[in-house]
Amino acid sequence: MRPTVTRREAVLLGGLGVLTSLAGCVGGGDAPSDGDAPADGPSGSGDIGGDSNGADGGDGGGEGETAGDEADAPAVSVQQAVVGDLTDLGPVAVGVVGAERTPTAPLLGPGSAIGAAEGNEYVALDVGIRGDAYVALAADLFAVAVDDTEYASAENFAQIASAELGGFPFAPGELRRFRLHYEVPEGTSGESLRVLLRVRTLPGDSFEALQPLQVDLGSTAASAATFEQAFDVPLQPFGETVSHEGIEVTIGEVQPVAEVSARRPPAEGTEYLGFTIAATNGGDRPNPILLSLSGLGGLSLVDGTGADVGRNVQFTGEVLGGRQFDPSNGLAPGESESGVVVGEVPAGVSPLYLVWSPPALYWRGDVHRYVWQVR
Image 1 (spheres, one colour):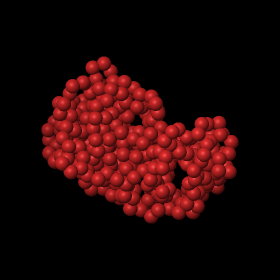
Image 2 (cartoon, helix red, strand yellow):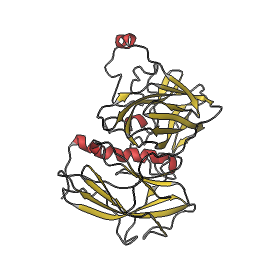
Image 3 (cartoon, one colour):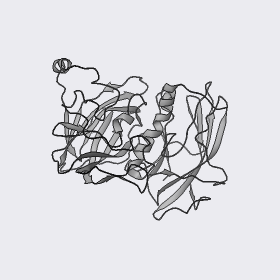
Image 4 (cartoon, helix red, strand yellow):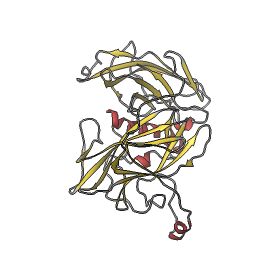
């Protein structure tokens, strides 16, 4: 029986897959399914904290405000940072690990790229965000500013990491890395990254605004912060069942896979890893339980830098004694599904973690992110 969901539920159930895909841009995961085209020129101007006129914005702030409203608004202090800083904003910390200029943005999957328009180039940012609790992060603004003109990321980061989609999930101590590209005119200087975030701390159900942040992309910290994975959560044992809001998931030990039927062996410098999954809908409502790597389902293989380094590998036949787990199969109450997931990762990568978040519609308790240590 294929479950049915409302449009609102579909957004919350499916949005996490887009977020997971975007996180894979640093580590070679699938490309995002939204935002395949670069932003169409500048997207507005104005001081940070004001109306961004849609510049890489989410669903909050700005819309419908008048100039008088902005003039009467109290001044908001802005945290200032440079490249290499990791700025503590309370429930999360945000930093730009590195910045460079590039003529292309790899948005259509491995081995493909989109070129900047004539006279333009991309400012590519390696961004690190760390959670200090179980939180969901929504970005109302995540734009590069040049002379007060704001440019949205080609990946549409803020639109994807929006409160409407549930936000990006973080576990305590978790670092997540994102590679973002901003198309700007060639030869510009003095760029800065403007950031307006809201965070929902579980088990709360509302998003609270954080202090605005502005990062000077032309300056580098004399002593760069350490951007590394530091999960401060209980690690899940392989083979034991995780139960979340009636969803029961059991993940077997991760094992090397020499080759996959109807596919090539792993590419040079990579390896295949496989594991079994069994999922049961123990609740009383239809639930599309989606479990896959770097796509729909909220599963990811992440390394010690916070990068999502796993890419889902399709296969036919059997691997590790089972057929491929079908993430498109929704489960009615009481139904179960099992199978095998295979991912391609850099050979020998260590440490390596497997992380799972259930769909955002089910983030109602204290925990929404589960971690297994592979290596």
